[in-house]
Image 1: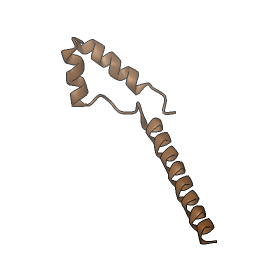
Image 2 (image 1 turned 135 degrees about the vertical axis):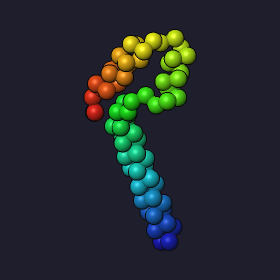
Image 3 (image 1 turned 135 degrees about the horizontal axis):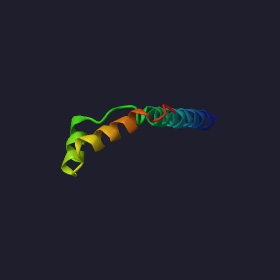
Image 4 (image 1 turned 90 degrees about the vertical axis):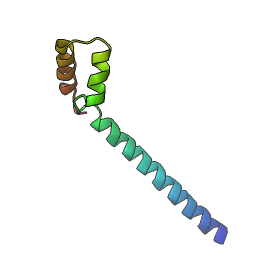
Length: 68
């Protein structure tokens, strides 16, 4: 009897953890693409040979990405 209760508790905890992990993953995907390039990313594309016009185009493309 106690084994069944412990098993049920384990199943509830595992299910809750799975649902929480899916929610966190969905939130990460929803917020992706909403932020402008940070300083490290700007430095990376400058070292890759991009000029100011290409970087401005990239930033405007990033700003135009859909929210969902």
